[in-house]
Amino acid sequence: MIGNNPEPCRDIDGATWDRYVLRHPGACPYHLRGWRQIIASTYGHIPWYLAVPGSSSEPDSPVRGLLPLFLFHSPDRKGRLISLPFFDNAGLLADDPATERSLLAAALELTAEVNAAHLEIRQDRPGPLLAQEELEALAPGLTYQAHGFKVGLRRSLPPSAETLWGLLPAKVRNQIRKARRCDCAGRIGGRGLLDDFYAVFSRNMRDLGSPVHSRRLFTEIFHHFPGQARIILVERKKQPLAAALVFRFGETLYNPWASSLRSFRPLCPNMLLYWEMLSHACGQGLRFFDFGRSSPGASTCAFKLQWGAKMRPLTWHVFSRTAEPWLPQRETLVIESWKSLNLALSRELGPELRRFISL
Image (cartoon, rainbow, N blue to C red):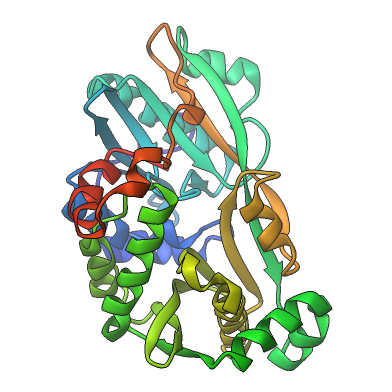
């Protein structure tokens, strides 16, 4: 026992886990249990899912908190426990500060047990996890740093797409109209559009110099979340020009992946793509649209801000057991030489590199 809380356990059934996620106001889709199987089966990283069970006096609350983690190994460095690799955040969820401390203590113990060099908790809130004296008591001899080099971007949605249209800047509306004048049109579907999505996504990643995710990742997403994942496509004369995968969770539509073909950028298919996503969210009666993360000041951040998005802090908390602390900024998705790689070869080799990049 830690205080009045039971000790965290390392496995609870998936239904109990997800019920807690769905009722917790601070949860995001990446807390859901399905990602455990998706990431493990796609890339082989080892999951460690911690949960604090409820007390026997509260039979209606079988869980008081949880923390999903993956043991993430890269060939050139010691392992890290990350909550959660490849995503903006999926950090601590708890009913109270005591439960949060219990989970953090268990995660630090696990870090030593599996001989990981670092524990990285990606949290969707500003500020430290705990007061300095509490951190020193929980993690004696460890180096702790909080990194805020990324921001999340989200906008609230009006009741209808018509209202949203009137709220957009004139320049944005004109670019959407231009895409339509150029015969671009949107389409929404499920797994059946995965080939078109991956064709656009993988080509754009190659052009950006970024190793692409495995196609299996997206196949697994539709296997585990067939009712929540959708693909939104922008086509011109049956040719896909832009594509996105969106994920519905609670009152929010999340967009973790979106791409457009650079050679068709003058036709503004990316502008129509984002309009299709936002209007789809309005049509579903959702209250928020999540654009994902960006670096403040980057062109991608400016692009999202023009749609009315608001920035919110993302804090990645790193506890290091080594003399040299881990800096998440050391990782990069950009390899300049990758841009000149043959497209087919980039699709073949990309996942083997992408699995080792936690961003």
